[in-house]
Length: 544
Image 1 (cartoon, rainbow, N blue to C red):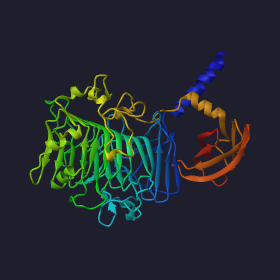
Image 2 (image 1 turned 90 degrees about the vertical axis):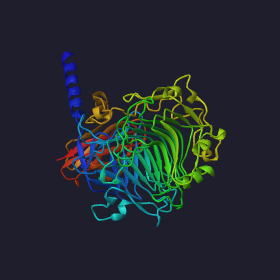
Image 3 (image 1 turned 180 degrees about the horizontal axis):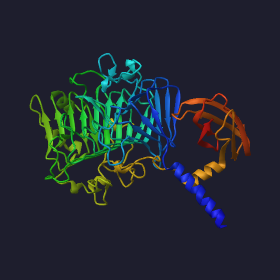
């Protein structure tokens, strides 16, 4: 018995050591066709990597993608006509992060994630060019840096339970990538449960398009948390921004929301008319006397003919609360194109500000009875649980909080696409931060993935599905036990996720031994992905 236990211990130790460091695959250039990235491998983006038009990038839950700091502005760019399906879970989020080791990660270590779509924008000619060295592809395809079109229903895929850390790269002054850059992204795209942390420029920047999003987190970024421009008209609900007391952009100044119709404030259509509801913006000032960076601006800076609207939200601790900037925005507020209703504001040094042009008094507009906005002297008056706990923030209202009630969804701008709740701010009693967020990303190495598979799980997988011989030469056998009959799909992939071979075979109930021809494969490491009604596994194997 002792010998058996010793053998089991050795096997477990061997598998644990095998998982101690996941293999790293360097990704460069262009991705074409169907590409699959799995969570048993770490992917290192070296330079700008383009998912080309017609290609689909599928990323498995728990996968880690690192941006190479040594290659300036490494980024993943999903071009028009391409799709990304980065669909994690609360237990296994997908993480885009810095290639640096724990303790050495910094804001702007890599470029970030860029998604381009074919939805309308208000740039003359209907087509824009991303910042970031114009994102011209190394193969000379300048169109890969473009966004916008005529299809508001365009589908660029889905992001769900995704973290983006230490991104946003400055190629030159006013020429930066953000943590998540969305250009002309259409309503067929789905975005939810995305956290952007320690970004150099904006956390979420929407350049036109009309994609909806919900459950977004901006944590300790440098510039704006939610930036809308060039005709973005989507809907966003349940969003959070938490600011670092001393970190703000000295060039453009940091805002919770920054919104323009376009750079000149023109009347070009579609208008920037995004609608946000149930947002909680925690600014740098824990109290009215908290010392902060001089480069913070406003919770919401609305300018240049924007028609941004915000409902049922909480604004805390900025130098300026709501800033309506310029005659065009004053007119938009007066005629109801721009709305702020049922919001709560606390501890802002200058709660309300209107600038530029003819005299316009913001206070009667913001304070109108019909708008039901509330002012509080101190952040503690709103009674959130722990909004200024940077390592473990808790934005849920306490049982006595005025934020538990007061939300209203009767305004026409909220008639579609929003979930009706009683509370104001991003949280009621539910904790949607649980499991997938990380407010201490610098301590994570991710060398084993986000949540590494245990030795027991590895042994169980190996016991239920085996490749033999491994390494193989001309033929490999797939042995497994099945609970049902039917078709089983088999894909052989390179280590960077490109499909090399795929076929379908029939499985029977009970023990199976399928034979796959590998004579056409070169020497090296490969992945085999197997899926059926009761199987969905990826196994690594070698060809010698």
